[in-house]
Image 1 (tube, one colour):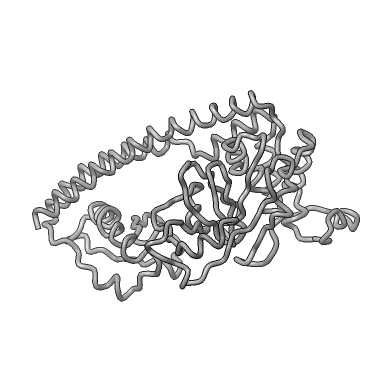
Image 2 (cartoon, rainbow, N blue to C red; image 1 turned 90 degrees about the vertical axis):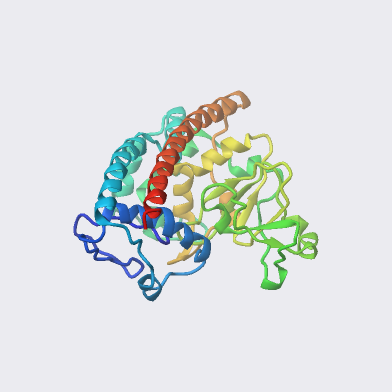
Length: 353
């Protein structure tokens, strides 16, 4: 969620129609103080009130800025800048979860990430008619045939002859569509839409519930612990996955998601693998459609290669990845503490109005 996010422009940039530019009168406002006032006070209000729509220029123009003496703002901003330096150090020390996953899997498989990145940067290559016939749809797009995609597919195929379909306990299924009348605040079942897994985990906050009658008639689309939910449509969301971890969850998954149930494969390792750049690039090359209307189907996903590690190795890899990701959570905790200190400074400043 980026609505209400404020930043200081310190170089020439292009702003699109979704970003508003404020010229601040520096004799009245310290821009560092004002930036954090927006990010910690105003943005929070935006997220809770305007989460489902754009905020207009007219609405922005009605914002009331704090009436605080500029000398006091400068004093508070000095303290904030000290904390900003500490925040930058913490942020620079953090490793993204996907980078941890990529590095562990690449090391285990001896996959050359550097070569992969170089191939992704290539914007032209030669091919022939025979190569265009390597699929039943006779696809001939750059996306489907590019060298990076072929590199990943050939590499994974050289490491395993197993496909995701070899480890599913039942066929991969699409979810169920819903109409406005099916929603019910008093319902016992969540309705897991693509928006509820955009953070690579099921987020119950903001997840709507459906009527008991709807859920009862669609129990074949329900989810349970260790299910993997995959978004099957929409640029920016397609391919994202979430592992269901709640033992007691009651939920129906949406028609724009796929439910993957595995057998004889560690579901957390499968989840990590599906978050990796290897799997995600397969989604990129195999998705169909134009613009934002792209889709990937169970019949495609089930044919994707998946490493066939033994049970001991699977547990070892899960522990290795999870340990490193958990270590990043400590950094996140420290970042949150620094942000809380800045928030306390803003609150103290507002008391002087």
